[in-house]
Image (cartoon, one colour):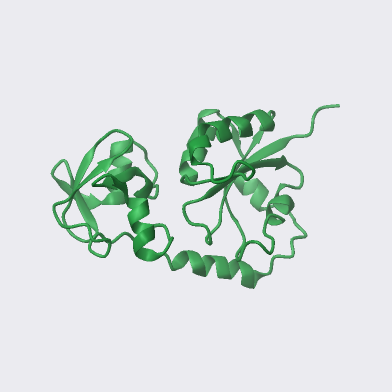
Amino acid sequence: MSPQLSVVYVLTNPAMPGMVKIGRTSHDDAKTRIDQLYTTGFPVPFNLEFVCKVPNSEEVEKALHLAFAPHRVNPKREFFTIEPSQAIAILKLLHVQDATNEIESQSTTSNIAQSELDAGTQLKKKRPPLNFTEMQIPLHSELVCKVNAAVVVVVDSKRVQLNGEEMSLTAATRKVLNIDYSVAPSPYWSFEGQLLQEIYNNTYGQLSDE
């Protein structure tokens, strides 16, 4: 008898910006099990960012947990202060089978009401974009990428200059990381030694940029 196929998932929750949950479950009822994570301890449901089929979900999950161990919020919980794109990038490097659309379309007996799903969407929409003026980062300030020490210069409240070209910090992040998809830039840049994500949270009250 062949072993039951399992999946590894990457979740976010609008009520916990800047955090990602990485876990695993069986394939057949993955949607139901993921929906069941929404309990009275969370004000809004989770968002499914990515899920993939793997024959060795326990090994893959452990590898991700080890890779992001420095960012683990609680050793007894599967939450990490990273961007979902960081976990997804590692999973894609393993050439896993993307099952996000398949799992999202699974029939489920979830009791999550549409009003609760809408509440999560509205909460996410309330996140303000990065604004350097509001974050008290002066014009002409240098922001340093923590990945490769690339430098951009702030030219107005929402734009930076990279190699003589003005653009959003999101676009600059794509260029310096050499990726073709967008990620939230604040975890990747620092101002005077402090991560933009920390400055953002101090400015806007624990909300993360989109």
